[in-house]
Length: 355
Image 1 (cartoon, rainbow, N blue to C red):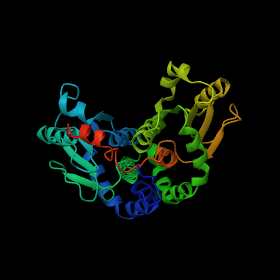
Image 2: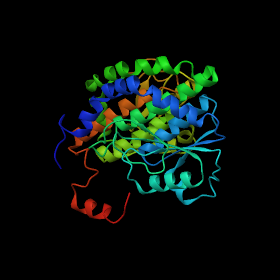
Image 3: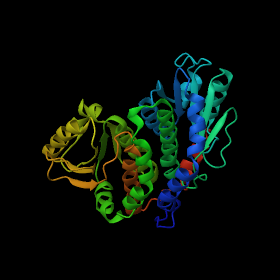
Image 4: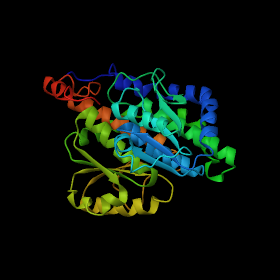
């Protein structure tokens, strides 16, 4: 496989994220307000997606819950094929996350929501077609790398804009900090992307070690997104779980010199993160803290991030995960753009089904 360089589409797409965010923050508030008005009276809001889009749906559920919604993230396959699991009603709203607009079960989810008479909104690329959607919230041009980066960050941003508008309509204190936090995000992301030299040593370690990722609350999603990115971009060995799930069993598999990536941002989970970090350091794991240092793990390498509201923080903590995946691909000589379709065996295997 060809060694990726800054010519790779994943790298170029990552680097344009600040500009993509600026555009959304310039043009996206009006569509987000329309979406907020459409779902304001819904009894329940289901956010539906698969893969990275499911992770965006999970973050969206946190954000919309803060705005006072009964918001729930559901996998596209489960939503489409297990209707008894989600008994849709006409007073429900469904938001389908589908960047490309062609995935099989995202399309089925849209059709099911429309047939039920629910309010149907979707989030996708500038050119995605979402039959059955009453309003398509646009993110970015369709990505040309299989490792989606900007589309994910911008999908979360769109949902944050919807939650911000809904919170403002309802006068909800929990979302009052969202708008200024989002306005600051492009420059913060640009500053993170400029710190490649801090990520490369971690990527070199990760390329030859077992890697575990953990985060709590809304940043549990960041940990599982790290798994998708590292596996699909760099074919890396990585496991990721919500912090407490990781502690209750899987942590016993961690050995000295394994790499643990732990998200630590100010919020309700910070004390527990410090306790788990101390356990990992005592075991002898190499610890990369993303967010803030903890006094219980003085030997950890820290990738410091600015303090932002905890519910907005996944929009920033995901960027170092993208950088780690890309840099691991560079170290391993893996092309992060192809979803391994440049290998004839995998190309033939993936040809057996429709995503």
